[in-house]
Amino acid sequence: MGNDGRDGVDRQRPGWRRTAGDGVLALALLGLGIAGTGPSAEQRGVTADWRAYALMSVAALALAVRRRWPFVTLALTAVAATAYLMLGYPYGPILLTLLVAVYTVAAHRTLWPAATGGAAALVLLTAHVFVGVRPPGLLGLMPAAAWVVVPFAVGTTVRLTRDAAARNRAEEARRVADGERLRVAQEVHDVVGHGLAAIHMQAEIALHLLEKRPEQAQTALAAISGTSKAALDELRVTLAVVRRGDGPAERAPAPGLGQVPALRDRLAGAGLPVTVRIDGEPAALPVAVDLAAYRVVQESLTNVLRHAGPATAAVRIRYAPTEVEVEVTDTGRGVAEAGRATTGSGLAGMRERVTVLGGSFAAGPAAGGGFRVHARLPLEERP
Image (cartoon, rainbow, N blue to C red; front, side, top):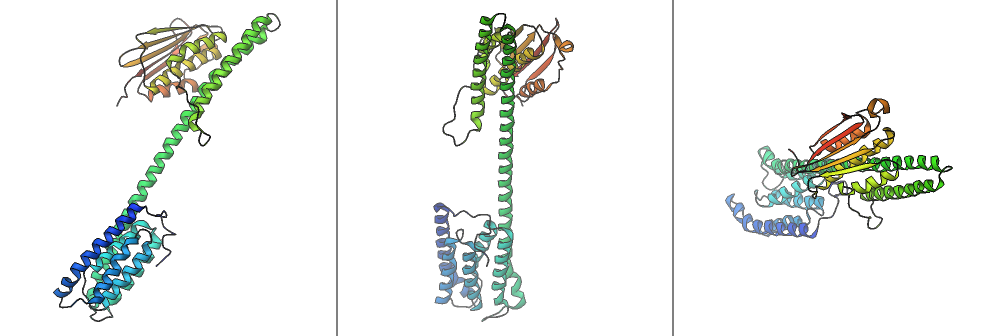
């Protein structure tokens, strides 16, 4: 009745718990069959002899391996039930074993192998309608077919529902993985972009001072070394999330507002004076909020290095019970002179980071000249 399971969707062997459960089911149906075969036969004026009980026992015990070898189980139950009916015994508990076997094949195997097995069982079972000791004739065709068609339809529905749920879980896992890759890519963009901008500025200073003031050029080169090391360390932590199978990944605290002073010191070595002002009492923030706020500050100061020309920058961090607010302003050339747009990819990335957490973001020319970036992030997720 088909390749037993090799074409199906449920190729893994069932665990011992399921096997034990199948054994319990087989024994339960065996007990039901022994208790009910005699009375059900007597109601139709037939005496159940040892052959009826033997066939009932074979059909019931076959269910003990129904999920391990479903087509074998179906074959044994179908043959036993057919022989039972052809010997003239009326419908009884033995047909329950056939119902379970048909359902198992339909629920645990793909459509075409299951349909082939079900069709073979149907043809075999309906043979008693025309031949045997007491053939019921065409009137018995529909009741006999129902014992195969109904459980097959139910099992197929269960399998399709289970497969759809599995596909949905796989799709959700892929979406989560894609989202994680995008997050890592954004983190890499911020880390590398900031590090390269700072290194570029320090290299320009070193080249400018190399001939005239070599001792100051050495300071700039030392700053390049420190900046590149810090950027590489942060990049290693960021990429640790995608490391698999290479031993324990290096772990370090995720970047947050607590690292703004170190960022200020690195940028001072790159030639950008930065002042940091903190309002309110610093408090532990949710990891996502802390990271987003830090990235807004980092990307804003990187843009100052890239576009503002000779300038200073000011960072203001305000802690409140329900939100944290960050603001970065600079005294540079502003938008028009520096060619800075208010919708660049860096600003778009910052805006996305903030809005996805339910916050607000604004960027544009500052009132007294220069450029201003402002973000508010709630400490609790908004509906």
